[in-house]
Length: 138
Image (spheres, rainbow, N blue to C red):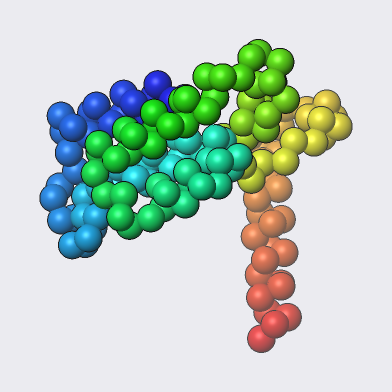
């Protein structure tokens, strides 16, 4: 994932976001910062000082973001395979995009494919329940 962040910063250098699109301080770098946060989420959860550094408004250039990536890479390059596997950042569910998902293996095993008609029926039931809930609050 570190290499994806480096490639992304390369693209930001070639095709930067619109200047000043997100304010005077930080400006268009805030777009890049948010994407780098998401790409590095699994690592920044373990490296609180680097997470604070990336969140700091003083870090407002691509060169500074590259320095952060370099520091992050150096911290993980000293670990062997066994040490890496012990870290939370190594787990599949530690990415930004999966952080709120909770896997429930028993549900996955019990679930059967649902037909379109069954899904429509379930959706109508949910809508009806929401309407009743809203009316009971009024």
